[in-house]
Image 1 (cartoon, rainbow, N blue to C red):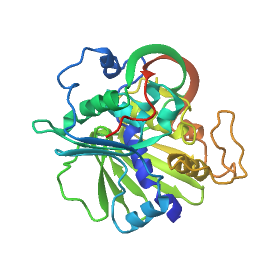
Image 2 (tube, helix red, strand yellow; image 1 turned 135 degrees about the vertical axis):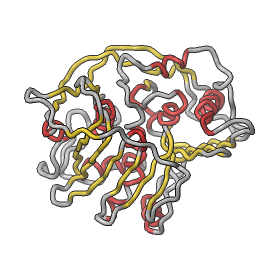
Image 3 (cartoon, helix red, strand yellow; image 1 turned 60 degrees about the vertical axis):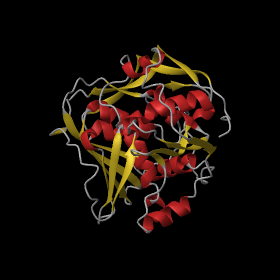
Length: 349
């Protein structure tokens, strides 16, 4: 079981990206459209000093040891008033932060989502941590010679719709923000997500609570009997749930389907999703840049791994249907950020 627990920072990082927006992305992406606007003073901000280097291979054993010692893993974005560090992140993840878009909205070379980099920058006097995305954008344009433009295109999607018998959802009050400066609870860690801090708490029962503040709360729970990870969310919108489903369906397959909320349901809800251990481990190996472990399971037509034991965890589709919802193939306009040019090797520090 310990081999699964070391994936919590990876899951938290993925979920924080998945829940970053509460509005539907297709046909409405004003932040992406802003990429073609004239350069504003904020966009022209730059780090005082910045270094860019390829990341070392991810050491899952070291992450396990650090977590057992109560030390949070140094992964993802870490931004404060003085520094902005982006550790073991792909260019696609970095572009998503800098241009305020989602990863699936970015069209470019495949390696944008494969090669990992460590970026460490010093925030200049007079700027704040809120200026960090604009500084990161300037750095990517300067060091990677990155050029991009937004466009909207019709794409195949999985539409999240209400089932024929109606939704079976429990509503919740709107989630509340938390004070990032408040003392941490015993066993609690804080990470920086794309839209602010995320607090992660390992519970006595082995589950992990990810507090996303105003974007809801997610609990990861390992079900050894079902051989699956249960993702229990509360205080999320249907748009936020669609984002989580997109992440789950892209485990082991970054080109997996995009889920779009077309339920018409408003408000906040409790929802639950399930992912098999086989797919979870495939995701961990992909994240670490390592070949997948040997498995008797076959690959699906989409390239995503199939659990070696078909009964080892229900499918995402079955999880959705239990909520009185359904996933249906449709087409929808999706706004994308098209990368016109990018250098694979950044200029020297």
